[in-house]
Amino acid sequence: MNKLFLPFIVFAAVLFLASCGKTKSSDNPLDKIRKEAVFIANDNNTIISYDANNGNKLWEITTKGIVAGSPAFYKEKLFALTQSGYLYSIDVVKGDTNWMKYTPTSTSNSLAIANDKIYIAADSLYCYDINGNKLWTYYAASMPCQSSPQVANDKVFFSINDNSIHCVNANNGIGIWISPTAPNAVFSSLKVSNGVIYYGCEDSKVYAINESDGSPKWNYTTGDKVSSSPTVYGGMCIIGSDDFKIHCIDTTTGLERWSYATLERVKSSPAIHEFTNSVLIGSYDFNLYCIDHVSGTLRWKYPAGSLIKSSPVVFGNYVYFCSFDRYLYCVDIRDGRTIWKQFMNGNTQSSPVVDDLSNGIHATISGMSRY
Image 1 (tube, rainbow, N blue to C red):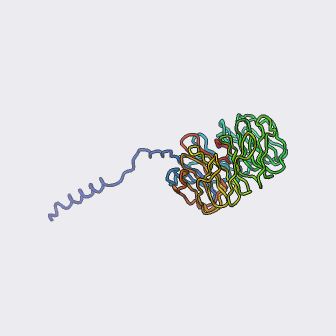
Image 2 (cartoon, rainbow, N blue to C red):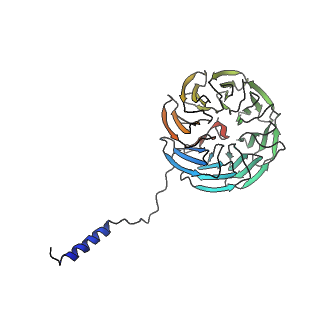
Image 3 (cartoon, helix red, strand yellow):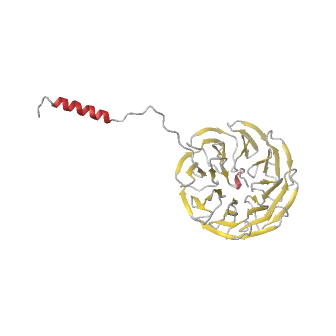
């Protein structure tokens, strides 16, 4: 090769390689797209978001302490309280912490949120705004609180350590009424429906009291303690019991419509699939049950790898629930078929929450459920 041409060849090669080099774009990265998602907190101080349709992990964050109660979805944010007293607001798309504030509270109860106010039932009943600023505290001599708060008709309802139900003004924290004391503890979350409050009790009974003043309406006796939380649907109150049964009670008379026997305790709380009129509920016998709401007959049961304490959540034709085998399951309600399951690498005391791109879907135990 003619040596006169060599410098020109080298120069051309350098120009070519330079043109192939990567340059950093000045454009900002595209924003993540909000998807239908399932959120779950586990005992590894972790909250995880999964795609609701295929189970792919969207994000995972570490919290300062365990989130034992179910997180609350509100206005495109996820709120969670750890047992170490840290209250979180989390971006549901990116998994970023909007803010974290320390509160002098420690509880395994779930949060309730309504009208831009966060309610925490702990050693007292606390109310914060959605920026984490405390608004008021309700204190009673027999505190602490035993059940998660329920908000309805501008009032907050919850049980405390003297086994009574308290009704408090949701705007200012002023007490309205206190129910007669039950014979034993009330750990069941309350359900408020059509002027009546329903809940289970450790004295083996399910109670219905009037929302207006806390006066008794009826009580129903099961065979053992009731720490499951009730669902009210179609004139029926449905709840689990430690007597190994799922009970369906007429909301007007307090009489049994049907009961279904499992092989172990039922501490999970039921969810409803309206399209098929099905009741979904887990048992300590490792099974998730799908039961006909009207007749009480079994449609199908799904075997998990361990006991099910988690309360299921229904979204579309899918039901989401956790087991102590450390998996989060997604099952088709119509036939009991596995859609997906994800190993969480930790057990959970919480129940799933679904971002349905609307108002969110919560388990009955959370204090924010529809039924």
